[in-house]
Amino acid sequence: MIIKAVLLFLVVIGLLGMTGRFTRSKPQDRRGPEIQSARKCPKCGTYLVGSSPCVCGYDRDA
Ligand SMILES: [Zn+2]
Image (cartoon, rainbow, N blue to C red):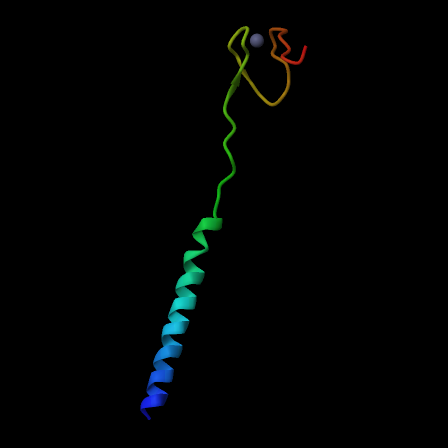
């Protein structure tokens, strides 16, 4: 009877350890998308959206 109690105790501890490890590993996978830094035109200072050139005529690729 004592052996059965010890085995049951070990099984319970094992299950608790597995569930604890499983729940702890989840928050690490949660990562938000990287926030892109705001890009401004070096000529007039207007905020630029995407890769389009500025309305003032400045083109960073030119
Ligand atoms: Zn500009």
